[in-house]
Length: 188
Image (cartoon, rainbow, N blue to C red; front, side):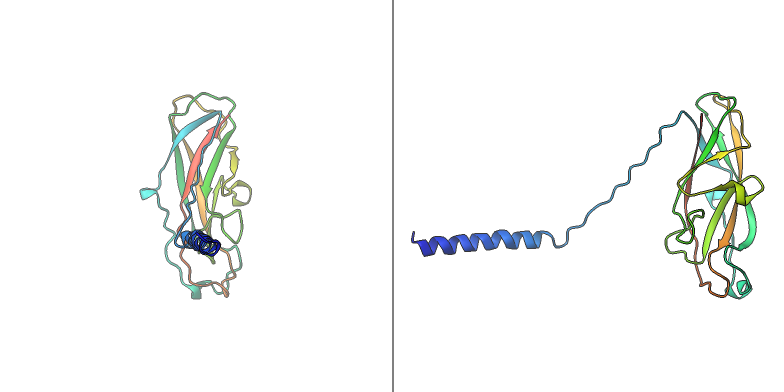
């Protein structure tokens, strides 16, 4: 085989290799897999007293919120309980923590909201004061009202939720809030 034929053959072969690589990237998609786990000293199974595991704040209209300031509460506070079952060991005194796994609001990391929500968010708290008992997204929050846990026992953690306006009422846009939050409870 002459040198030119070898050169042409090599060029054709190289073009197939480069063309194959160029076409290989088209249409390929990547996958993201999230792995989650917690290793705790002790924990309980957690359920909610909320019917259907959904808290519905209702429907509000922009015209009724025109004078509302940023971070105003919209509607009424909703009460719900986390019910603890099958706690793994006794602890007295106990340091009880709630971990709330959910999407943080783009407005404030102390609130929960789906990524598309721009005017609404949810504030979750325990106790009577939202400013001191706020449960923030993806952080352990120590509960001060529970000081003893019994192995295999059942307990209830009362929580509250406020719907929060994340823009001044005059600037708010029509919005839909729909954010799941997964609670886990652990203790020393």
